[in-house]
Length: 285
Image 1 (tube, rainbow, N blue to C red):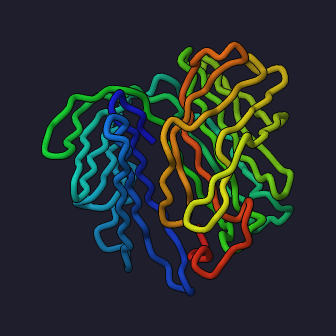
Image 2 (image 1 turned 45 degrees about the horizontal axis):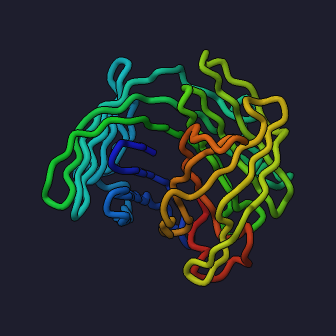
């Protein structure tokens, strides 16, 4: 996810299984902070046509491609009404999350686990074309790589995910399963030497209904022994309901009410809702 001075951008390439058929799914989203509008696109790809997955590049030709060269990552993304071309350079080394890179997806089942690592602090610069106008943009990005076998049709494996990006150059990743009372995460200080963080509490401050489903909205986060211990996360703009998750950008404030960072939040419907037929779309790998 990229947070720039003008917009927030999300690019996800997933390999999924739908009714026994394996496919790839590209999802791109852009939120324009000034106009307070969302743009979203998804493209299913069968038989891996035009999908690129190599050590040098990942993406879908003509839609969104990431290139890895030296210490930099490039991103070129094209939607029907926007385009983004940026370079990203890592300010910190990559981080393995949770239990040496292994995340338990809420339940005690060896088939419901993933491996998970990230670049949590990437400096971004480039150009955005939106509404026919080109803008120079700069900001920060967070790159995730997660894989394994887990079942989105099982509501007990649905999650609430928070990537806290503090202005002081530190980050926190929280992967929470409130319906299971299970949580895991990572604290990445300025040095880049991370440590596991699963002693924390997230308390919803409210709820919203989107698409007939209930999602939490606004949170108090308590992390004993970590940074300022207590923070409030408040949505900056209404979220966007994508194919199977609700996503938004939020502000982080400390106990004195000071703006100390930004947070991307990803919420799945099974946390506070029974999974319905239209929610049960895929088995992810």
